[in-house]
Length: 129
Image (cartoon, rainbow, N blue to C red):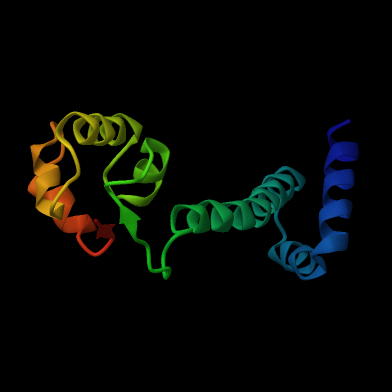
């Protein structure tokens, strides 16, 4: 049974990647090792595009000039566009704005609980009034 599985996996994989099959044959390794190597290579080749998509997703805003008006933005927009600001902090920004009026400078954000000078500095080029 094992040889049928090995043979099926190797045939399918080697059809798609013939150079790998010839390399494995030249190594003169056992059937079990060929199966493990084939499976490992298949996982790596299939996972690479997924990893690239995942990495690209984290940088989806990189290279784009991002600005957000802290006097008008909703919590979702603030959380999406400001570095280090999640939905809870974004809601605190909106709550503070509603209670105290419009922000007059980016530094006013430090008055919001949970927003420090470091967060303002990371986002200074994104913040508009």
